[in-house]
Length: 66
Image 1 (tube, rainbow, N blue to C red):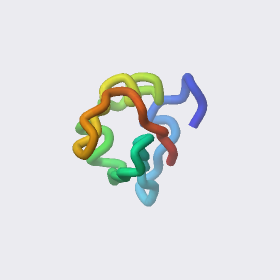
Image 2: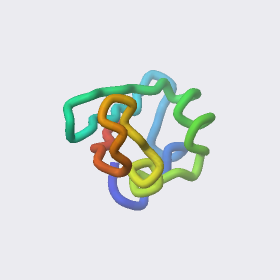
Image 3: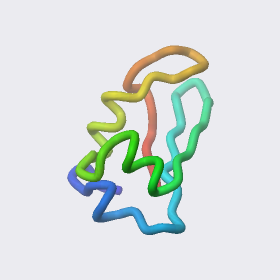
Image 4: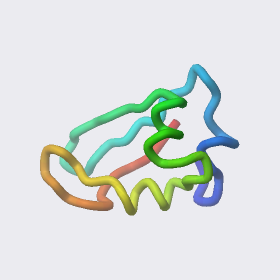
């Protein structure tokens, strides 16, 4: 997923949005859940900026992949 691609343009039904924190904690979202949480026009930058790790509580230290 490049810097300017949005969830709605890149994710298909079978895809998972995978988020990995620098501390090693991982989370993933189904397409429908990712769009509900982040919005259809969210970019990787938007997601990184908003994510707070539930383990280390750091904000913005995540890697976003589909």
